[in-house]
Image (cartoon, rainbow, N blue to C red; front, side, top):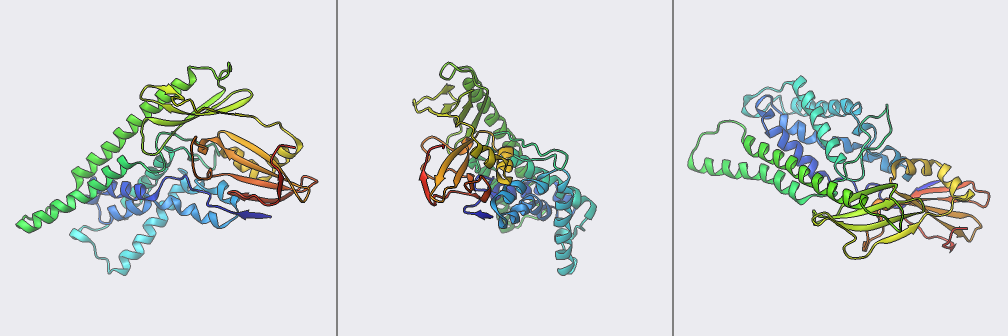
Amino acid sequence: MYSQKAPVFSDSLEPITHFLTGACLGRAGFNRKTALATATMCLAAEAPDLDMVSEFGHGAFALGHHRGFTHSFVGSFLVAGVVVGFLYLIWRWRGRKTNYNLPPRWGLLYALAYLACMSHIFLDFTNGYGVRPFWPFSERWYSWDIVYIWEPVLLILLLGALVLPSLFALINTEIGARSQGPQGRLAARVALFGVCLTWGVRDYEHRRAVNAMDARLYKDQDPLKLGAYPMPGNPFEWHGVVETQNFFATMMVDSLAPEVDPRGQMQIRFKPEETDITLAAKRSYFGRIYLDWAKFPITETYTLESGGYLVRFKDLRYDYIGRNQRTPLTGGVELDANLNVVEEFMGGRSRNVTDPSTP
Protein backbone atom coordinates (compact mmCIF):
# COMPACT_ATOMS: atom_id res chain seq x y z
CA MET A 1 0.00 0.00 0.00
CA TYR A 2 1.32 3.43 -0.87
CA SER A 3 0.51 6.98 0.10
CA GLN A 4 2.04 10.41 -0.33
CA LYS A 5 1.65 12.81 2.57
CA ALA A 6 3.77 15.72 1.34
CA PRO A 7 5.29 17.08 -1.88
CA VAL A 8 8.35 15.13 -2.94
CA PHE A 9 10.24 17.91 -4.65
CA SER A 10 10.24 20.77 -2.14
CA ASP A 11 13.98 21.32 -2.59
CA SER A 12 14.18 21.37 -6.40
CA LEU A 13 15.44 24.48 -8.19
CA GLU A 14 12.57 26.94 -8.66
CA PRO A 15 11.21 27.31 -12.23
CA ILE A 16 11.59 31.08 -12.70
CA THR A 17 15.38 30.80 -13.04
CA HIS A 18 14.92 28.12 -15.70
CA PHE A 19 12.49 30.24 -17.73
CA LEU A 20 14.68 33.34 -17.49
CA THR A 21 17.78 31.39 -18.50
CA GLY A 22 16.04 30.06 -21.59
CA ALA A 23 14.84 33.54 -22.51
CA CYS A 24 18.34 34.99 -22.15
CA LEU A 25 19.83 32.17 -24.22
CA GLY A 26 17.37 32.93 -27.00
CA ARG A 27 18.03 36.67 -26.87
CA ALA A 28 21.80 36.22 -26.79
CA GLY A 29 21.73 36.04 -30.59
CA PHE A 30 19.79 32.95 -31.60
CA ASN A 31 16.64 35.03 -32.11
CA ARG A 32 18.43 36.69 -35.03
CA LYS A 33 18.94 33.31 -36.72
CA THR A 34 15.40 31.97 -36.66
CA ALA A 35 11.93 33.00 -35.62
CA LEU A 36 10.55 31.52 -32.39
CA ALA A 37 14.05 31.03 -30.94
CA THR A 38 13.34 32.81 -27.67
CA ALA A 39 9.96 31.15 -27.19
CA THR A 40 11.45 27.74 -27.95
CA MET A 41 14.36 28.09 -25.57
CA CYS A 42 12.22 29.60 -22.83
CA LEU A 43 9.80 26.66 -22.88
CA ALA A 44 12.48 24.01 -23.37
CA ALA A 45 14.48 25.40 -20.44
CA GLU A 46 11.64 24.40 -18.10
CA ALA A 47 10.21 21.44 -20.04
CA PRO A 48 12.28 18.73 -18.28
CA ASP A 49 10.15 19.36 -15.20
CA LEU A 50 7.28 17.69 -17.04
CA ASP A 51 8.30 14.71 -14.93
CA MET A 52 6.41 16.40 -12.09
CA VAL A 53 3.43 14.35 -13.28
CA SER A 54 5.08 11.46 -11.44
CA GLU A 55 4.02 13.17 -8.21
CA PHE A 56 0.50 11.91 -8.87
CA GLY A 57 1.84 8.44 -8.11
CA HIS A 58 2.85 7.19 -4.68
CA GLY A 59 5.85 8.79 -2.98
CA ALA A 60 8.43 6.15 -3.81
CA PHE A 61 7.44 6.17 -7.49
CA ALA A 62 7.68 9.95 -7.62
CA LEU A 63 11.06 10.01 -5.90
CA GLY A 64 12.38 7.30 -8.18
CA HIS A 65 11.35 9.07 -11.39
CA HIS A 66 11.93 12.73 -10.56
CA ARG A 67 14.98 14.12 -12.41
CA GLY A 68 15.30 10.88 -14.30
CA PHE A 69 14.34 10.38 -17.95
CA THR A 70 13.50 14.01 -18.73
CA HIS A 71 16.68 15.22 -17.01
CA SER A 72 19.02 13.01 -19.04
CA PHE A 73 21.02 13.55 -22.20
CA VAL A 74 19.01 10.84 -23.95
CA GLY A 75 15.58 11.89 -22.70
CA SER A 76 16.20 15.51 -23.70
CA PHE A 77 15.97 14.51 -27.37
CA LEU A 78 12.32 13.62 -26.80
CA VAL A 79 11.64 16.63 -24.56
CA ALA A 80 13.07 18.98 -27.21
CA GLY A 81 10.88 17.35 -29.85
CA VAL A 82 7.76 17.85 -27.74
CA VAL A 83 8.54 21.56 -27.31
CA VAL A 84 9.22 22.15 -30.99
CA GLY A 85 6.14 20.17 -31.98
CA PHE A 86 4.00 22.28 -29.65
CA LEU A 87 5.35 25.53 -31.09
CA TYR A 88 4.83 24.23 -34.63
CA LEU A 89 1.14 23.73 -33.86
CA ILE A 90 0.92 27.25 -32.41
CA TRP A 91 2.69 28.66 -35.49
CA ARG A 92 0.23 26.91 -37.82
CA TRP A 93 -2.72 28.05 -35.68
CA ARG A 94 -1.57 31.68 -35.87
CA GLY A 95 -1.47 31.51 -39.66
CA ARG A 96 2.30 31.03 -39.96
CA LYS A 97 2.99 34.54 -38.75
CA THR A 98 6.25 35.60 -37.02
CA ASN A 99 7.83 38.86 -35.95
CA TYR A 100 10.44 40.73 -38.02
CA ASN A 101 9.48 38.64 -41.10
CA LEU A 102 12.04 36.03 -40.01
CA PRO A 103 10.99 32.47 -40.93
CA PRO A 104 11.30 29.61 -38.45
CA ARG A 105 14.08 27.10 -39.13
CA TRP A 106 12.74 23.96 -37.52
CA GLY A 107 15.96 21.98 -37.52
CA LEU A 108 17.78 24.81 -35.81
CA LEU A 109 14.90 25.27 -33.38
CA TYR A 110 15.15 21.60 -32.41
CA ALA A 111 18.88 22.02 -31.71
CA LEU A 112 18.18 25.14 -29.65
CA ALA A 113 15.48 23.33 -27.69
CA TYR A 114 17.95 20.57 -26.87
CA LEU A 115 20.50 23.17 -25.77
CA ALA A 116 17.91 24.77 -23.49
CA CYS A 117 17.13 21.35 -21.99
CA MET A 118 20.84 21.03 -21.24
CA SER A 119 20.71 24.37 -19.45
CA HIS A 120 17.94 22.98 -17.23
CA ILE A 121 19.96 19.89 -16.36
CA PHE A 122 23.03 21.97 -15.58
CA LEU A 123 21.09 24.40 -13.39
CA ASP A 124 19.62 21.49 -11.44
CA PHE A 125 23.10 20.00 -11.16
CA THR A 126 24.28 23.14 -9.32
CA ASN A 127 21.99 22.57 -6.32
CA GLY A 128 22.07 19.81 -3.73
CA TYR A 129 19.23 17.56 -4.97
CA GLY A 130 21.22 16.33 -7.97
CA VAL A 131 20.49 14.91 -11.42
CA ARG A 132 20.97 11.63 -13.28
CA PRO A 133 22.13 12.85 -16.71
CA PHE A 134 23.40 9.48 -17.94
CA TRP A 135 20.07 7.64 -17.60
CA PRO A 136 19.35 4.90 -18.76
CA PHE A 137 23.00 3.83 -18.83
CA SER A 138 23.62 4.89 -15.24
CA GLU A 139 21.31 5.78 -12.34
CA ARG A 140 24.08 7.58 -10.46
CA TRP A 141 23.22 10.97 -8.98
CA TYR A 142 25.48 14.00 -9.55
CA SER A 143 25.33 17.37 -7.79
CA TRP A 144 27.61 20.42 -7.52
CA ASP A 145 26.06 21.63 -4.25
CA ILE A 146 26.88 25.32 -4.78
CA VAL A 147 23.49 27.03 -5.27
CA TYR A 148 20.40 27.02 -3.06
CA ILE A 149 16.96 26.29 -4.58
CA TRP A 150 16.70 30.01 -5.35
CA GLU A 151 19.63 32.36 -5.89
CA PRO A 152 18.80 36.11 -5.79
CA VAL A 153 21.95 37.07 -7.75
CA LEU A 154 20.97 34.84 -10.68
CA LEU A 155 17.39 36.12 -10.67
CA ILE A 156 18.53 39.76 -10.66
CA LEU A 157 21.00 39.21 -13.50
CA LEU A 158 18.60 37.31 -15.72
CA LEU A 159 15.56 39.47 -15.05
CA GLY A 160 17.58 42.66 -15.59
CA ALA A 161 18.79 41.37 -18.95
CA LEU A 162 15.19 41.01 -20.11
CA VAL A 163 13.65 44.12 -18.57
CA LEU A 164 16.28 46.78 -19.29
CA PRO A 165 16.42 46.29 -23.11
CA SER A 166 12.62 46.56 -23.26
CA LEU A 167 12.82 49.80 -21.31
CA PHE A 168 15.48 51.19 -23.65
CA ALA A 169 13.44 50.08 -26.69
CA LEU A 170 10.45 51.98 -25.31
CA ILE A 171 12.60 55.10 -24.95
CA ASN A 172 13.86 54.70 -28.53
CA THR A 173 10.29 54.43 -29.75
CA GLU A 174 9.37 57.62 -27.93
CA ILE A 175 12.21 59.56 -29.59
CA GLY A 176 11.51 58.06 -33.01
CA ALA A 177 14.61 55.85 -33.34
CA ARG A 178 14.36 53.10 -35.94
CA SER A 179 14.20 49.48 -34.73
CA GLN A 180 17.11 47.31 -35.84
CA GLY A 181 15.52 43.96 -35.06
CA PRO A 182 15.34 41.92 -31.86
CA GLN A 183 16.64 43.81 -28.82
CA GLY A 184 18.71 42.74 -25.83
CA ARG A 185 21.54 40.67 -27.28
CA LEU A 186 24.32 42.42 -25.32
CA ALA A 187 22.36 42.45 -22.07
CA ALA A 188 21.57 38.73 -22.38
CA ARG A 189 25.20 37.87 -22.98
CA VAL A 190 26.36 39.99 -20.04
CA ALA A 191 23.77 38.30 -17.80
CA LEU A 192 24.83 34.81 -18.87
CA PHE A 193 28.45 35.72 -18.23
CA GLY A 194 27.40 37.01 -14.79
CA VAL A 195 25.68 33.69 -14.09
CA CYS A 196 28.87 31.79 -14.90
CA LEU A 197 30.87 34.20 -12.74
CA THR A 198 28.46 33.62 -9.85
CA TRP A 199 28.92 29.88 -10.18
CA GLY A 200 32.68 30.38 -10.09
CA VAL A 201 32.50 32.39 -6.87
CA ARG A 202 30.11 29.93 -5.27
CA ASP A 203 32.33 27.01 -6.26
CA TYR A 204 35.36 28.72 -4.70
CA GLU A 205 33.53 29.31 -1.43
CA HIS A 206 32.18 25.76 -1.48
CA ARG A 207 35.68 24.33 -1.83
CA ARG A 208 36.88 26.46 1.09
CA ALA A 209 34.05 25.13 3.25
CA VAL A 210 34.70 21.49 2.29
CA ASN A 211 38.46 21.81 2.82
CA ALA A 212 37.92 23.36 6.26
CA MET A 213 35.67 20.45 7.25
CA ASP A 214 38.13 17.88 5.94
CA ALA A 215 41.06 19.38 7.85
CA ARG A 216 39.81 18.48 11.34
CA LEU A 217 38.81 15.51 13.46
CA TYR A 218 35.37 14.86 14.93
CA LYS A 219 35.55 13.35 18.41
CA ASP A 220 38.99 12.04 17.41
CA GLN A 221 37.56 10.34 14.30
CA ASP A 222 38.46 11.08 10.69
CA PRO A 223 35.59 11.93 8.34
CA LEU A 224 34.64 9.12 5.96
CA LYS A 225 32.40 11.34 3.84
CA LEU A 226 31.44 14.98 4.03
CA GLY A 227 29.39 17.58 2.22
CA ALA A 228 28.66 21.30 2.38
CA TYR A 229 25.31 22.66 1.20
CA PRO A 230 24.34 26.31 0.55
CA MET A 231 22.06 28.23 2.87
CA PRO A 232 19.60 30.93 1.75
CA GLY A 233 20.63 34.55 1.97
CA ASN A 234 24.30 34.24 2.96
CA PRO A 235 26.71 33.03 0.23
CA PHE A 236 29.39 32.31 2.85
CA GLU A 237 27.24 30.14 5.14
CA TRP A 238 27.03 26.40 4.51
CA HIS A 239 25.27 23.47 6.13
CA GLY A 240 27.97 20.88 6.72
CA VAL A 241 27.44 17.14 7.17
CA VAL A 242 30.19 14.72 8.16
CA GLU A 243 29.95 10.94 8.36
CA THR A 244 32.40 9.04 10.58
CA GLN A 245 32.59 5.37 11.52
CA ASN A 246 30.07 5.69 14.37
CA PHE A 247 28.10 8.89 13.89
CA PHE A 248 27.04 11.83 11.75
CA ALA A 249 27.94 15.41 12.64
CA THR A 250 26.01 18.41 11.33
CA MET A 251 27.24 21.97 11.69
CA MET A 252 27.34 25.41 10.13
CA VAL A 253 30.47 26.41 8.21
CA ASP A 254 31.67 29.93 7.48
CA SER A 255 33.65 29.81 4.22
CA LEU A 256 34.65 33.46 4.51
CA ALA A 257 36.92 32.64 7.48
CA PRO A 258 36.84 29.63 6.81
CA GLU A 259 35.66 28.20 10.14
CA VAL A 260 33.80 25.04 11.08
CA ASP A 261 31.02 25.37 13.66
CA PRO A 262 31.68 29.06 14.47
CA ARG A 263 28.67 29.21 16.83
CA GLY A 264 29.43 25.99 18.69
CA GLN A 265 26.15 24.34 17.64
CA MET A 266 27.47 21.09 16.17
CA GLN A 267 25.04 18.20 16.51
CA ILE A 268 26.16 14.57 16.81
CA ARG A 269 23.81 11.78 15.70
CA PHE A 270 25.00 8.26 16.38
CA LYS A 271 24.24 5.71 13.71
CA PRO A 272 21.32 3.49 14.73
CA GLU A 273 21.88 -0.20 15.25
CA GLU A 274 21.04 -2.27 12.20
CA THR A 275 18.19 -4.68 13.01
CA ASP A 276 15.92 -7.04 11.13
CA ILE A 277 13.34 -4.23 11.18
CA THR A 278 15.58 -1.64 9.53
CA LEU A 279 16.89 -4.18 7.04
CA ALA A 280 13.32 -5.09 6.02
CA ALA A 281 12.50 -1.41 5.53
CA LYS A 282 15.65 -0.82 3.49
CA ARG A 283 14.83 -3.79 1.25
CA SER A 284 11.40 -2.33 0.43
CA TYR A 285 10.81 -0.47 -2.83
CA PHE A 286 10.82 2.88 -1.06
CA GLY A 287 13.90 2.01 0.97
CA ARG A 288 15.92 1.08 -2.12
CA ILE A 289 14.84 4.22 -3.97
CA TYR A 290 15.54 6.48 -1.03
CA LEU A 291 18.95 5.04 -0.19
CA ASP A 292 19.99 5.26 -3.84
CA TRP A 293 19.27 9.01 -3.80
CA ALA A 294 20.18 10.10 -0.26
CA LYS A 295 23.77 11.06 0.55
CA PHE A 296 23.56 11.00 4.35
CA PRO A 297 20.59 8.75 5.17
CA ILE A 298 19.64 7.95 8.74
CA THR A 299 16.72 5.91 10.04
CA GLU A 300 14.50 6.12 13.11
CA THR A 301 12.43 3.11 14.18
CA TYR A 302 9.14 3.33 16.11
CA THR A 303 6.87 0.67 17.59
CA LEU A 304 3.19 0.94 16.61
CA GLU A 305 0.18 0.13 18.75
CA SER A 306 -0.77 -2.50 16.18
CA GLY A 307 2.40 -4.44 17.00
CA GLY A 308 4.12 -3.40 13.80
CA TYR A 309 6.86 -0.90 13.18
CA LEU A 310 7.44 2.42 11.47
CA VAL A 311 10.88 3.15 10.01
CA ARG A 312 11.47 6.78 9.05
CA PHE A 313 14.11 7.79 6.51
CA LYS A 314 15.81 11.18 6.60
CA ASP A 315 18.65 12.69 4.57
CA LEU A 316 20.81 14.92 6.77
CA ARG A 317 21.53 17.16 3.80
CA TYR A 318 18.22 18.85 4.56
CA ASP A 319 18.23 18.77 8.36
CA TYR A 320 19.72 22.22 8.90
CA ILE A 321 20.67 23.40 12.38
CA GLY A 322 18.03 25.81 13.64
CA ARG A 323 15.51 24.86 10.95
CA ASN A 324 12.06 25.83 12.21
CA GLN A 325 10.12 23.85 9.62
CA ARG A 326 9.81 20.10 9.19
CA THR A 327 12.75 18.55 7.38
CA PRO A 328 11.76 18.06 3.70
CA LEU A 329 12.22 14.96 1.59
CA THR A 330 11.69 12.50 4.42
CA GLY A 331 9.65 9.32 4.16
CA GLY A 332 9.02 6.00 5.77
CA VAL A 333 7.96 2.39 5.64
CA GLU A 334 5.34 0.77 7.87
CA LEU A 335 5.85 -2.91 8.63
CA ASP A 336 3.58 -5.40 10.33
CA ALA A 337 4.71 -7.67 13.18
CA ASN A 338 6.07 -10.16 10.63
CA LEU A 339 8.09 -7.41 8.90
CA ASN A 340 5.92 -7.36 5.81
CA VAL A 341 5.49 -3.97 4.15
CA VAL A 342 2.12 -2.38 4.94
CA GLU A 343 2.65 1.14 3.60
CA GLU A 344 5.35 3.30 2.01
CA PHE A 345 5.11 7.09 1.96
CA MET A 346 6.83 10.44 1.52
CA GLY A 347 6.48 13.16 4.14
CA GLY A 348 5.85 12.91 7.86
CA ARG A 349 3.25 11.00 9.84
CA SER A 350 2.87 10.14 13.50
CA ARG A 351 0.02 7.64 13.65
CA ASN A 352 -0.20 5.09 16.49
CA VAL A 353 3.41 5.54 17.56
CA THR A 354 4.03 4.29 21.11
CA ASP A 355 7.79 3.90 21.31
CA PRO A 356 10.14 6.40 19.64
CA SER A 357 13.21 4.30 20.26
CA THR A 358 14.76 1.62 18.13
CA PRO A 359 13.50 -1.81 19.23
